[in-house]
Length: 410
Image (cartoon, rainbow, N blue to C red; front, side, top):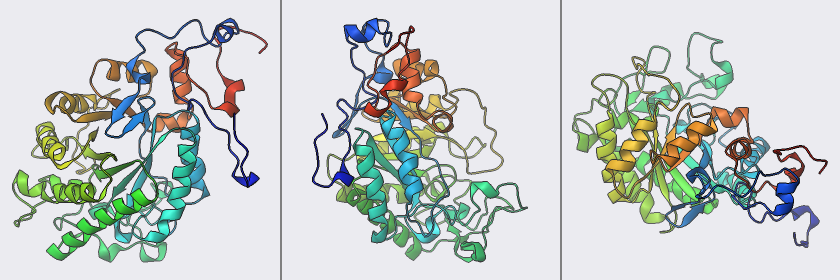
C-alpha cells in the first residue's frame, strides 16, 4: 500500500515487488488467464537475479546506452527523465544512461549529455530517483568522444557531405584531439595528437565525472572504451601511433584506461560496481582483437572492474562486420569463460526472447543489453516473460495491460 506523503506533489505508488521481478502466480491469476500455471522450475536465468558487487539486479534484461542528442550544454532535460523512466517502470533490470561527456569537448555532438561540472548533477539525480522507484539499477556511461567528437547529431545524418559540427552549431572543430593525429575518415575532423598534459586532464576528468555520477546517486558507472571513441582510440594500434608511454606496446596502449579505472575505483564506494564497455575487436586486420580483449579484461579485473560490456567495431571504416543475430555474443562468452571472476554482458542484434534467454541460459553471458529493440518495444521485459511462460510483476499502474493466456472479463 502506498503511504501518503506530506507534499502530495511527491506522491508515488510503492512497487512491491518491483516490476520485472519473477513472482509465482496465485490460483486466482491462473484462473483469470494471467498465467498458465506456476513459473518454470528452475526459473530461466534471464529472469533470475544477478549479484554484481553490492547490487542485486532483479533480472538480466538491461537497456544499452544509446545517444539521444537531446541536450544543450550537457544538461539533462524532461526528455531524458521520461525516456529513461519508461524502461524502468516497465521492468528493465538495469537502465544505462547514454554516453555522457566528462569534458565539453568530450561529447560526441553538441547535443550530448555532460557530467563535466557540478551543475549537471541535479538533472541527472532526478532521473536516478525516478528509476529507483521501480527497483531498477540506475547506471551511466561516462566517456570522451576523442577524434570522433564535434560531430552532428543523428537527425542530421545524410543531410550534408560531412559529419563535422561547426562552431556556429556548438561544435569545437579546432579542439578535437586523440592519441595520434589520425582522422577516423575524411568526413570527420582531423584530431590533434594529445600532449601529456592533456592526457592528465582527461584522466582527472573521468575520475571527477565518476564522482559526480556517484553524487547523483547512480548505482553503476561504466567507462566507455568502445566504438572508436577516445579510450578505445588509445587501445587500438590502428588509431594509436604514439611512441611514448601511452603508445606502441599492449602495456602502453592500455595504460590510460587502467589508470582511469584505478583512479575511479579509489573514489567509489566499495559496494558500487564499475563496468567497462569495450569494442572486443576492430574487425580489421592488424587491429584490436578478441585475444586483446581477454588479456585486458584480466588486468581490469585486478584493477577493480566488475563487468565487461562486450561490443565491437566503430574505430576504422575498413571494418568488415559479420552481422547476424547475436554476432557479438562470442566475445562476452570468451570473457566470462577465460577471465574467472569477471562478469560479462552481450549486446548486438539480440531481439527475440528466445535468443536473449539462450545467451544467458547457456552461460555465454551474465546479462543481455538491448538497444534498438527496447526503442521499438519499451515493454520488452513484459513481452519476453509472456513468451517464455513466466509470471512477473507489472508496474501497478499498467496492470490492466497484462497479457493473458486465455480470455476473461477481468
